[in-house]
Image 1 (cartoon, rainbow, N blue to C red):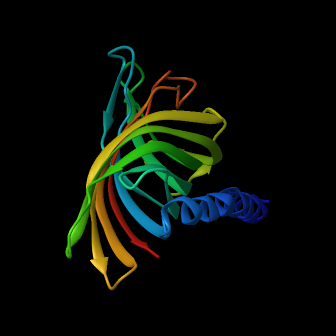
Image 2 (cartoon, rainbow, N blue to C red):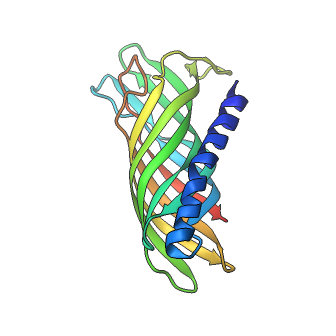
Length: 209
């Protein structure tokens, strides 16, 4: 089921991007669509509405397809498809239960990306926009149990506000290595029972073709 979802999403995104590639070539006479792959280690945490819960910062990661669609030489629409795993640990101080939560989302970034003209070494960028995610799976374990079990406490959808900056380091004439940092501030509920939200900070590493 998950594999089918990935394939359908990838094909749909490819068909969506194809007209932009032809449009950019028509208007600018140059390659103005960049596709690439990225791996993004992250550090995530939970934000609570009260002091009943305490939490730890946990490491996770995402991976997937990135796409920059240019509509002027310096302004781009940044999108793609990322499979994002966020890990959390929080404690209910009233009953002294500690829970580990692992949530995996399929996320689509929808952001404005501003790029410098660049030089022989690199282009620098800043981005601002949103991410829209749907839950693929959620697992939990209580009081440091040895194995995770399926959880129904995670909400189905996640929306976030994304802000970031970085550089695209030139490799040859057309290719580039992307490095950057992105802060994603989730503003929808992540966990039903605790009514928490899950922001994260990600290190972006990718290769643009």
